[in-house]
Image 1 (cartoon, rainbow, N blue to C red):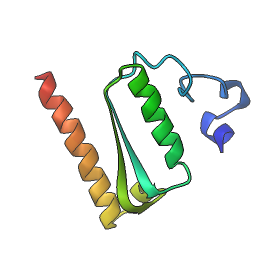
Image 2: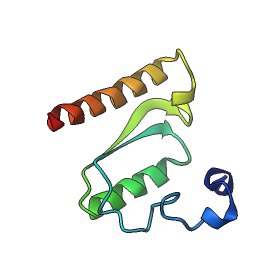
Image 3: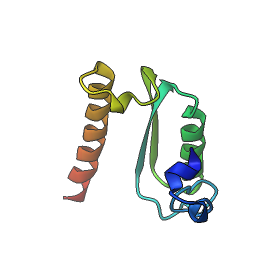
Length: 98
């Protein structure tokens, strides 16, 4: 799975592909929206903790009742709720830039 994501073996240790464990202090404000029932949720939680340890403003949320890939399921309540949350988060940040 990781090699598919990275694209080739040469990128497996590239912190731009897998930033966990790297210096995260230059990351922007971050929203992590995990599914409640997801085997990868622990990775999202760990990444949120790393960001916080580097003083990056991070919001780590779990969408109740969802499973991995909920944003890939059009016309489901979970997808709508997730996209609404992301849009709200982005709008809040955009207003603070004005």
